[in-house]
Amino acid sequence: MKSTLHFLVTSIVDHADDVVIDEQTDAERTVLTIHVNPEDMGKIIGKSGRIIRALRDLIKLIAAKHSVYADVEVAESEPTA
Image (cartoon, rainbow, N blue to C red; front, side, top):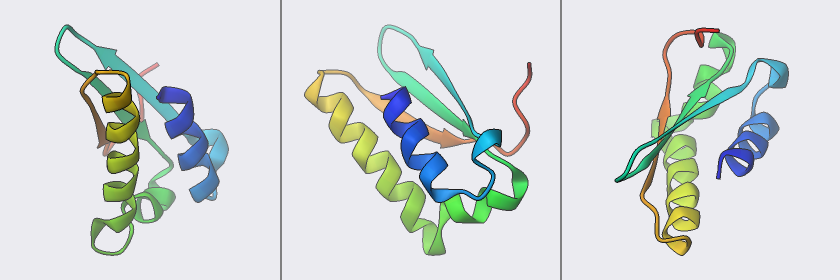
């Protein structure tokens, strides 16, 4: 799921080198957090949130096929190294 999301996000943004996907997994779910260049934030969210909603739906479909719950979040700040 992480690699699929990374591919999709890098295909959308202008600063593909700045894309970082963090994955946190616990017993109940997996949370994928997208970190992008601040200039690309609007492209990830899209008009009325359509792009991020579509990304979330795709990742949830992939996760459901593997009997896992997954969620996608967009970070407002730069990732911590």
